[in-house]
Amino acid sequence: QVQLVESGGGLVQPGDSLRLSCAASGLTFTMYTMGWFRQAPGKGREFVGTINWAGGSTTYADSMQGRFTISRDNAKNTVYLQMNSLKPEDTAVYYCAAAPRNRRGTMSQDYAYWGQGTQVTVSS
Image (cartoon, rainbow, N blue to C red; front, side):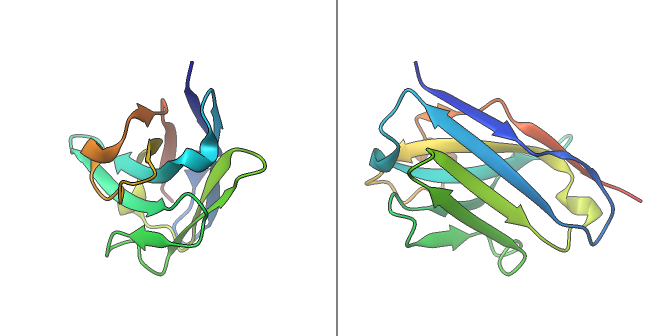
């Protein structure tokens, strides 16, 4: 079956950087747009960004533009989220997800598969 497994979360201080990984299995990775979402305590799921199947096109939420970078390694079936200049308001559970590659992937409804999430806490 399809599995998306996130890793790399943890507790960091404001201004720090963190890289999350999401390893996919059970699917043909290049058939999917990959996305990252997050959910803070008491809030709904929020779009972070997405990357197309080839890795040549990315889209980010306005609040993450310039601080977050999504990349993918199709040989490793893995997508990454590099987060720089982290702020306390970035504290959330971060999820990766896979959408059919004809989907743009900016909405959660685009996505067929989801990981279990990894906690990121930004605090001094």
